[in-house]
Length: 249
Image 1 (tube, rainbow, N blue to C red):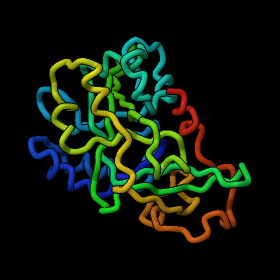
Image 2 (cartoon, one colour; image 1 turned 45 degrees about the horizontal axis):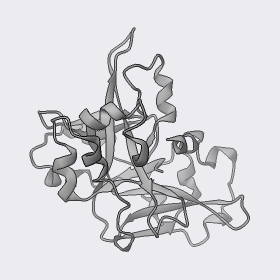
Image 3 (cartoon, helix red, strand yellow; image 1 turned 120 degrees about the vertical axis):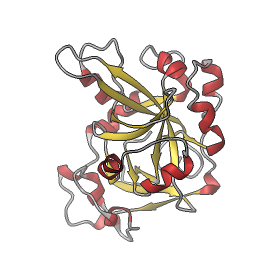
């Protein structure tokens, strides 16, 4: 599962995707330390003309009557992409990369109640990309709404003690296949989705401030020695419902 992530090294994106274009002001707007569902995020779509675009996190299928369904579709399970009506057509035709340099997950402690925020990233600190899907929903009374979802897989050995799911992180060698503009067979696309190698990743507890999606800044990813001893554990600092709803898919 993935319910929060960071995008700080935005300038690295164009080094990885050299044929893509990105507006400077868009990059500055999208880069944050605490990106949450229902916010606008940066995606690289598989359009014939390579572009980095803005999309709302939470996929709204074209047939949806209400865009609020996107709140329950922040994640899509790799194992059922080809079966779910909300995702199977997008898997064939509308795939995207969602760049990040780390993501957050909450570890349930031995008391069964305390949840410690963990920040998970590559050991080398480099940028990486989640596999995603995108769609355009045509509003009856407004402009078209572009949305997306992050695909998840079973957790690797590093993430498993924290959560049983993790975002599907694609190696750079798979970017071209995933972003191919032509329709692709579902089996070939699903075959690209695997748990990322645990030995290349690391996880550390961080401040409970990250629980509030309005919190921002570098302090959010600093390792916390005693993250459970926070003096402020109000309801506003609990992981938001959207991170729980995402487990349904």
